[in-house]
Image (cartoon, rainbow, N blue to C red; front, side, top):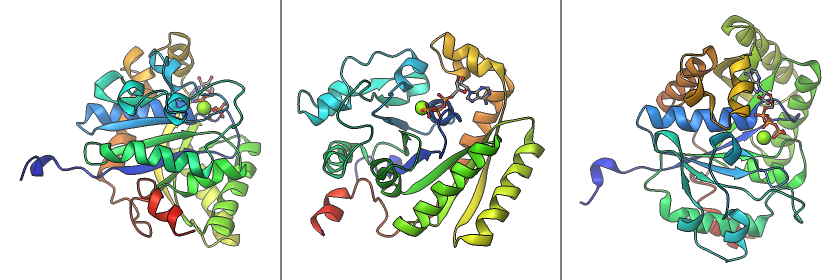
Length: 274
Ligand SMILES: Nc1ncnc2c1ncn2[C@@H]1O[C@H](COP(=O)(O)OP(=O)(O)OP(=O)(O)O)[C@@H](O)[C@H]1O
Ligand SMILES: [Mg+2]
């Protein structure tokens, strides 16, 4: 059988947060590159339609974006950019478009365009718009794995709780992976996770798992200014080491199986059922 030894089956991982500015894009970008470094093929889809900026963090051009794909100006192959460590980027549309997130029919179109890649990619990471708007939440809920970025500010904590609640109550998604970001050290990250988990467990049927932490590290801000990802600009930094650990944990983890598997790539079938 051709390529049987290398057969891959993409898991779609939506990177989300309640509050904006907690580090979703930096986590998505650096995690994609870190996965590439350990031999995993990652594709990053910039699903933040309000403020697509993953391409900027990677120093890649975004002449063609998801918008062009959706308006059928071009095909997926014209949109995909190759980034560091062989990761692939699908740049998002940025600007005052009609949507700040993908609607259902657009998602179905995107899923159709992505499906041919499902066997070549290990992880599809979707960087999403923050907040609990219906379109953003529906995009997150359609993924195989939900990865919540949680930072230690009190407001971020409450907003993350609201997001977990909406996912549980309105979308029956009760398994969520958490990355604690901008923490002082690993122990502070574990504490933040424990505290959040305790509050969530008290009121919601949700099961959280801690994927790991990224420390607060000025190298991240500096790398953004340099238009490069932290892993490339500062490979020796604490943050880069943390992204490497997250990538290893993620690729070792048996990610939770969701109903019907490949939800995102299976969108057509889901949609047809309605
Ligand atoms: N671990 C970290 N240490 C220091 N600064 C960080 C860290 N993570 C993110 N930042 C900084 O926080 C800011 C927001 O990061 P980022 O754009 O990744 O967040 P976001 O959640 O994608 O935001 P948005 O909701 O606007 O899409 C950036 O200036 C970034 O440099
Ligand atoms: Mg972002």
